[in-house]
Length: 182
Image (cartoon, rainbow, N blue to C red):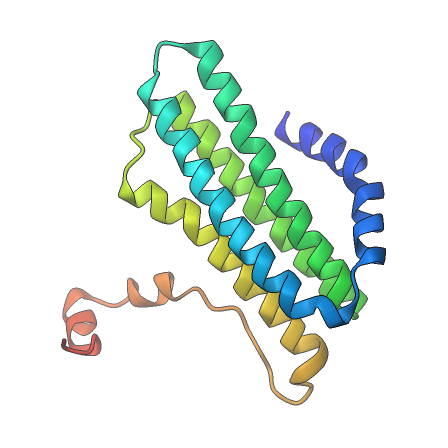
């Protein structure tokens, strides 16, 4: 069902996406990037607030569903903003398509997380807040990686690396030795 909703939303937003891409020029890059990353961070915090409200009202199904729909709409808006940025600034067709796919995958994963939190009455805590807010950081890093591959670093390879997996793949002793002392 989530995939069907995604397809419907993508169809509804394709004309607005094309209009937004046409209206944005490359000279507006820094302004767009700064404002969209701030907007995305704010919207992700609002998504977390919706999750907190969902977990605070476990017996009120109608309220939970309304909050869930609002959170999905915010996540969809973030997805559209990042797709617009990709369409505007990434010239290589393959890189652009890959970036758009990655953005949609991350946003779908966040929607699935919120739905699971509602379904299983999971607590909204600092860890869930970190998980939600980190999506914005991941999307920005993936965008910058694609942009570097596309324009700036023709002879330098750029990769998106999620250090969370790297750090926790070591044993505890290795992590303590590797972490700089404060």
